[in-house]
Image (cartoon, rainbow, N blue to C red; front, side, top):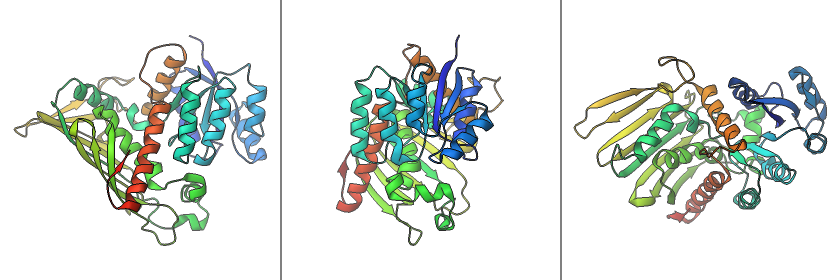
Length: 353
């Protein structure tokens, strides 16, 4: 099987998420990264390309022009404010697009991008990483198969502590753009709340129809939200709750989800990502272990493997397979969720998604 030739925009050497994408692309040998425009700083872009041993460009516009007959896929790993522009141009130039979440900075940008993507012959994928974990996928399959009966309530929790102090004021690069509303749009809601709400929808197969948000900026002087609690109304009369926070001091990266039905419940925790717990009506708990990783059972499937699963799905879709993909439709739903939560915060009542 020939590899899919790809180029990357953003994600220069020294950053976190760019290397995660590159590792994920390499894991199953489905892609060949051949070029990149790795930074808005032309010098740093070329230096990053040289370190990676591939062709570098000073701008993404030059990359698209020079590589249009050579590559199939553009991987976009930039701050939120440039997602819409770069992804739109990539699709119009005939490239498939793998895009970091959230899809865009604003809902209006998301609506416009979804319209372009849905009418394009090119495919769009978004890196909602946790949907790549094997036991999250098994959780979804079992819930949709009726193992816990009708879904009644969902609880999803995503907490970090890395923004518990105003490190953006000290020049910390990742914090600086994520806490600048002109660049990020939303704060914790966009950064990790989008993961959480997508997990609720993915595992249950149910859409979120309305929200009531309690949104906070805990760190004094910060211009975006850094903590939010959200009540959820979902399809088929299911209800739920969601917490996302980046100011839980000492918390590293806690992600958990539990779904209760009328015949039992499933729960998953990122700290034990190879396990899925089933609780029966009498309280008996059964631990299911991952058996679908690349390595034999008992060898953990971690963050890189989950990311790589998304890239495998995307490669399969590019090559014509009918596989489930976290695409522009899902990306738009996340942006509608964020917008509804912020509207609810202003109105102090339920807002339709």
